[in-house]
Image (cartoon, rainbow, N blue to C red; front, side):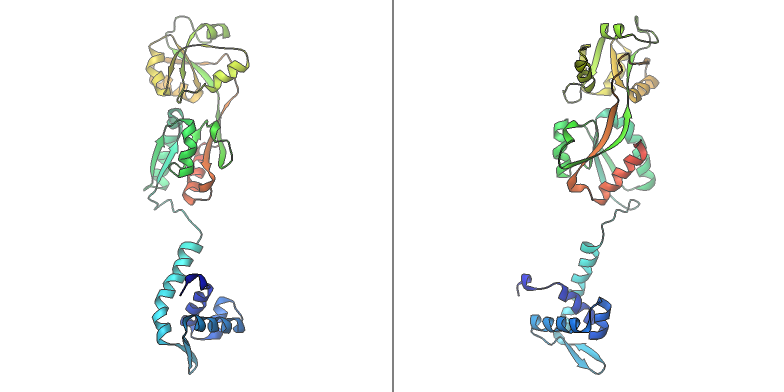
Length: 300
């Protein structure tokens, strides 16, 4: 028998007949008219070349062939209902799932502690993993499912096939060592452009702030370019360099090193931090849940 010739709805009819032993009661249970139910039973008899259900007293009793088919048909119908037709759900309390988020170390510092605490309370069996990869590799990782989300500044993901949601905005501040010889409690534009600067460029691209300076016909003197924001801590503390970084990071560094946080003398646009995901996983319950967690924790 070719499965393509089978109307799977007939299996539902068969299962109802096994349960109710009556065309009338089976029809009522499925919301069918009695003539429609009788026609479906007739098609079943043709399909299996067997009477299947025979009138015996007040009920329709299954034949030997119907009795043989009853259990496997019940399993098929139950599987379709439970695993195919049932709406997908994510039970955070019992889920054993690993969530991978692409993010640079600067965003990692902000999002991981609060997210980890939330998982510990609401999804104790879940695991969290972060990746720092080049921006141009993020799209492939999200599309393949190697990562659920990307959090940060990812202009390459603002394209067809990807969703984005703003989490928060941050402004830039300057960071200098506590005993800087020429810069006091405030820094002028003249001092800023006269100073030597340290630049963090995680994937070798031009910094968004330098793009802004270039649009204004300005340029700072960068003497050091590094890949990781947290490397700035000992560098700024032990040199006369200036670092222009998101304010949250500058405040964190000031709590752990002999550095001062100063307002930037250059008023640049705020930096918006988004979470991105691929359309393949837009309705995946676990992905939806994690997006909701991040937006709830950090969304402005």
